Image (cartoon, rainbow, N blue to C red):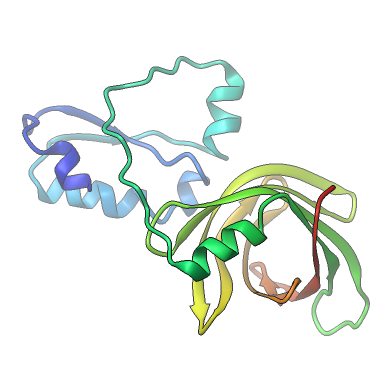
Length: 199
């Protein structure tokens, strides 16, 4: 997709790369894109430093935006399992608990999901409001979803929670329940609960 987007551009074109979903220093997308453009011979490639995410660091600051002449995104096909997953995770709340380390003590957490949208082969957008303990924030999170047979497994990797840190998780979803593990740089634990349709 990147190669087709720049096909026909002069090699001295000014190209600015940015990724709006996560901090620049944790972004898995920018470095490969930058390297690919350099290998294609482009000489004026720069990266925009997004410290947190595009919403916080650009839109919320009322910086200028402009809709460019982008091609329509290709339709992403879904099989029957994926359609069922999308329908089952629309307008729901995941209510449950998490643990920290080896402790058996549980702490409440809550994830309200407006909708999920498949945007790539294994990649989905989750429009969510996340609450754990006294902390709450809203985000659209891009999450790879893998399949263990007929069971979806959310595979979040190095996602920044503003003011809290960078977290990873593996969460299995089945029969109206979820369970899995979460981890940060130096700690982690388990998480589990039920999935309920919102009124």
